[in-house]
Length: 309
Image 1 (cartoon, rainbow, N blue to C red):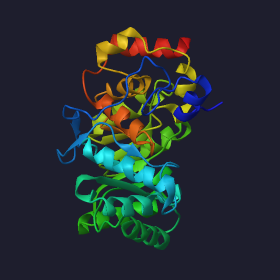
Image 2 (cartoon, rainbow, N blue to C red):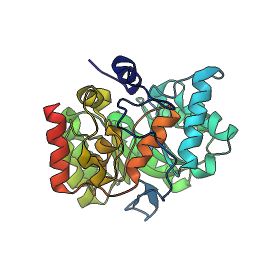
Image 3 (cartoon, rainbow, N blue to C red):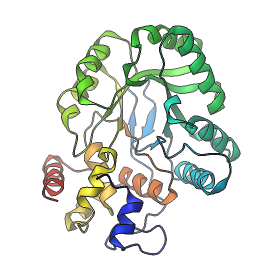
Image 4 (cartoon, helix red, strand yellow):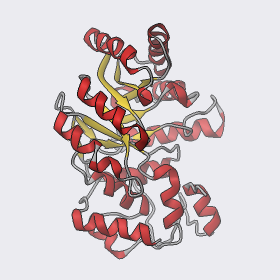
């Protein structure tokens, strides 16, 4: 069974005032008081905060209504706290349009690093989809365009390289989320001139640590991490556990921060992109970008704690 944070709070009946947390031991998230940890994009030296914002499902919302307002507050809280990287895709329903409209409404665009994807077959269809993404995001220049799940990669790469040369795309990348595609992803990383890759990694999905992340470091590629909570499954494992006392050693005040810090401790990772439209969870996630990161022994302790849950 897959649990999200809202379901955990409801099932455990342990919500506390404010945002509501899975356990009373966890502190309420606050606006970070220190600058967020950043890592540089190897291709340019540009520094990006190590925690971003994913939009799959969370930002597939219609204009108006409580979901729209909540998404706007989440995006505003993210930017106010120093977050920059917002990742989307044409396959995420209305997410691109929502990001574009909400960023415009709240004057956030200069502060955001917008990443999206091309996810279709054929050159003409790819060019049309990329043009639509510019329109929906209200962005003449998109910071990062990625070939989503490697779909029709060889056809789309010339289009992306031409757009980068023209200045309408700043960085080029590829994505996947499944270990079964790692062979194809590795081949793409060796064959093409990429700036970024996006791949899954978490306490529960560690295969990319052995294969993909070392190659990204070798090739000088920035790395976005999707599924840092294994699609929410990790919250199902830890939902009955109080936050361990040793979490304070790495500056974590919630299980979400512990799980994110595990991922961020790998120096090959540029930015993790957990998805949410809850402003409180946005701030909680960004808290993982402050304070110390776990060393090798502490990372093993995190793995052991989750495995034993």
